[in-house]
Structure formats: structure tokens, C-alpha cells
Amino acid sequence: MRIRRATLEDTETLIAGNRAMADETEGLALDPELLRSGVRAVLEGRVAGRYYVVEEEGGVTAQLMITHEWSDWRSRDVWWIQSVYVWPEARGRGIYRALYEHVLDEAQRAGAAGLRLYVDTRNEHAQRVYTALGMDGAHYRVFERMFV
Figure 1 (cartoon, rainbow, N blue to C red):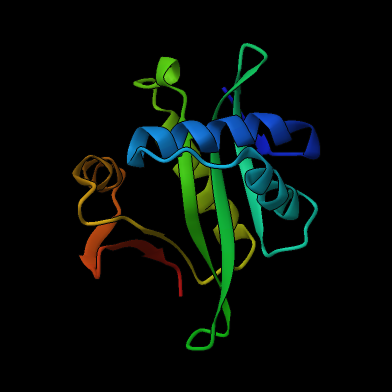
Figure 2 (cartoon, rainbow, N blue to C red):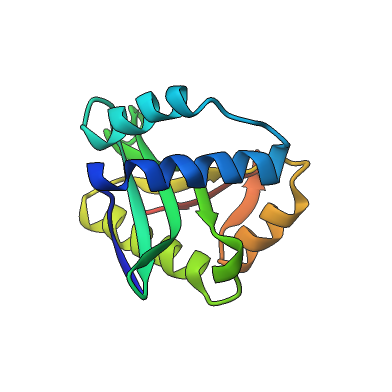
């Protein structure tokens, strides 16, 4: 398993992952052209965010998207996990945990104030996954790991 920052070459894969995630988790059919615009804005650095992908055996099996939000309380960025998706055939192999730990480490090394993830209170499956990763859900259902 290799985790790396996504590049423009990953655009179509990220779009496919976003569409699959929205369909699976919320029954939404997202517009691929709208997604393409949003994904490219991230990959081209036009917004404060980034994508990570997991490669296994030459193919992408997971993706995670981060945005950065300024915290005036801490005078530093806080990283937010906006979305994470592991293709069904790759689940159950520790990919969620590996992605989370990778991004947690990158956020710390970058000097971020912390890492957060909002989980809809109706999404009990997601809450169980993130609680198992060690995130605390007590603060307004925001799972967070603050460094400062």
C-alpha cells in the first residue's frame, strides 16, 4: 500500500470515487462536470485543500480530501477531512486507518493546529469507523485531534 498526494492525472479516478461515495452514502447522483471543476480546483491549488490516494498493485483503491481552515484561536490552520472513500473491494484491509494516520502525521509536520472530521449524526456506520480510529466524537459530533 502506498499513500501519495493526488495529481491532475488522478482527476477521473477522484471523480469516480466521489460519485460512488455520494451514491453509496446518500443516494445522490453527482454531476461529473461539476465534480471535475471542484476536483481540478483542489488539484491545481486554487483552493486550500488537497487529495490523497492509496495505490495498491498499480491501481487507486482509496481517496481522502482535506481542506484547510484558519483558526484565529490558535493562529494556525486546522485541517478538515472533507471526504474519504475506499472502494468496496479494498475494504477491510486497514486502508481507512492508514489514510487517517498518514494525514494526521502530515498535518502535524505541516504545523497545523489539528485535524478534524465532521460526521452526520445520522451516519452511525461512519461514527463507528472514526471512533475505532481513536477520534473523539464528544465535541458537536466533530471528531478531532488537536495538537495545540
